Image (cartoon, rainbow, N blue to C red; front, side, top):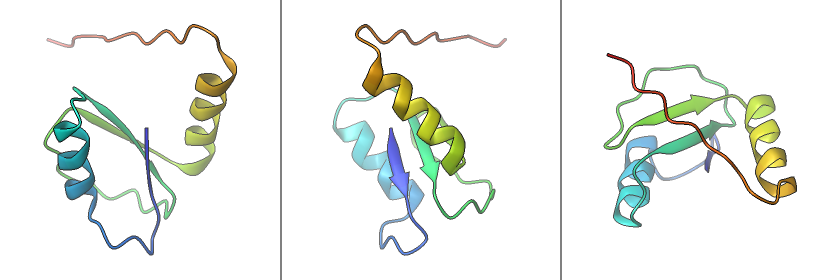
Length: 74
């Protein structure tokens, strides 16, 4: 999980590079500016709005054993 605010000095692409360098294989980006603009990333990523992001964070922070499902689309 990563947040991106409108005033952020880092680009969304740069955030994905940092996340990849940290060892992640995917990323969920909360776009607090709610721009809804397509963005390239260096790892598989999903961009969600603030409300959805807060729901995901709530699940992560309030669940003892977080379960994530990866769905491969052919």
